[in-house]
Image (cartoon, rainbow, N blue to C red; front, side):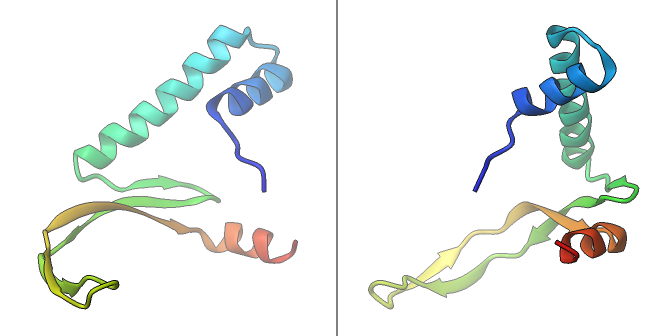
Length: 95
């Protein structure tokens, strides 16, 4: 399984649009910073044809240590979620 890094994405931008490596990397950083800042501000991020990122607030709850079975409190937290668009799910299922 391959991992796609920021450098891989910036290289793709560089090759496709003839940007310099530095400019392509800056564009990737700007995109990820915008997504991150929007999520921090509790805003949904919808990318047409790809999917939606959003933050969910999960309440505190009692869980169990799987090794010992001892009850433990799982603190309240905020988690980032991603829901792929229908179009993206269809493209992935074709492969």
